[in-house]
Length: 198
Image (cartoon, rainbow, N blue to C red; front, side, top):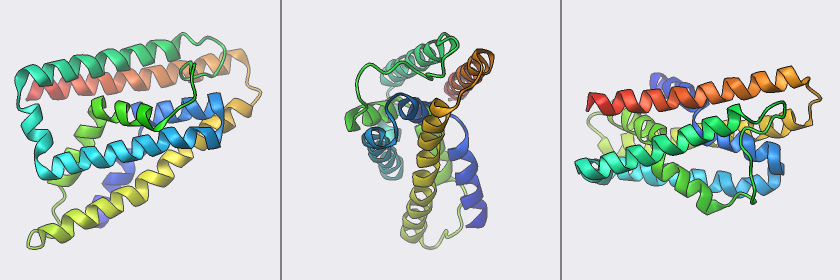
């Protein structure tokens, strides 16, 4: 169970679409207004987890045409976000937000977020620590994952708010944007590699 907990922490803390957009909304709107978006991400990630546990995600993703459509949509959206981040210039913006974040925005992102599916699949199907008690294992995994997911995403939200308040030089701000864009492209590369393996 400790190995599973460590894996959850490492997988959740690494930059992906959810945490990068959370930080972006935090920088654009502040902590409290962005909590609705984080709630949408939270509901979305738990729906993805439920889909993985019940096998619904596997059934849906077993349709080759649907898997291709979802992959194109998610990769296209992630590349779009990476470009918006990289070309934000000397202003920490992560992404330009034109409307307040909402629950539906978070849900929509998780529905096409390849990292959400990959992480949930690897955590739910791997790290078996109670093979004779499947229900206990799944429920305890869900509790552990949510207990780590919530503070990690709130920390990224706070980081976005804090970065917005800093008086960084234009060069430092561009460097942060480039690093975030490269992280997003890394997620795209992993998604494409994972799709090629299946």
